[in-house]
Amino acid sequence: MSSVAANPDIIAANLAAVEAHFHSEATNEVEAALDLYTDDVVWEAPARDLRFEGKRAVADNYTEMFAKMEDVEFETLQRFATEDRVVDDSVVRFRLTGEGYLPLQPGTQVQMRLVHIFEMRDGLISKEIGYEMWRKAD
Image 1 (cartoon, rainbow, N blue to C red):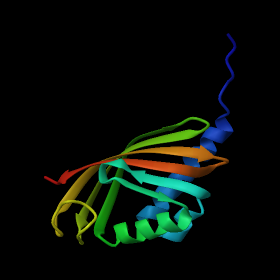
Image 2: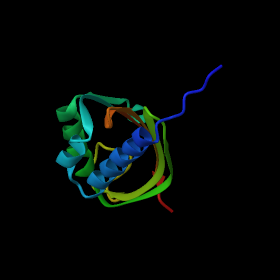
Image 3: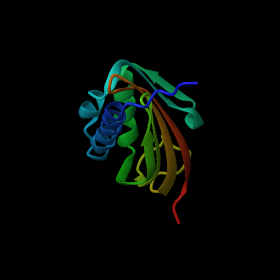
C-alpha cells in the first residue's frame, strides 16, 4: 500500500483563501468575499434549511444576513485543511438587529458556535456549509 504525501502548497493556499474570506466578512466587504468563490459555489446553512447556488445568490444572502447583525466578533478555535477541504470551528458574538435571520428577538446578544466545512477547488471555495448553533449570550 503506497501513500502519497499531501501537497503543502495547496493546503497553504486553501487556508489563505479561507482566512481572506473571513477577513472580508469581518470588514463587510461582500464583493471581496465573492472573489474567493468559484462561479458555481454552493452555500448551505442546514440548521436554517438554506441553500444558495452561484455567487450572486450567496452575495444577496450575505448582504441580508449582515444587515441584521452588529458588533460582530469572531474567535477562531481551530482551523485545519487538506488539499480539498478546510474546516473552521469558531465562536461568533454579535447583537441581532433585525428579524428573519435567527429565531431570536432583535436586540438579543447572540453567541454562535459556527463550524464551517469548505470544499476547495483550485484555491477557491466551491462549497461552504455552515453549521450554526446559536443561543443568547451570557
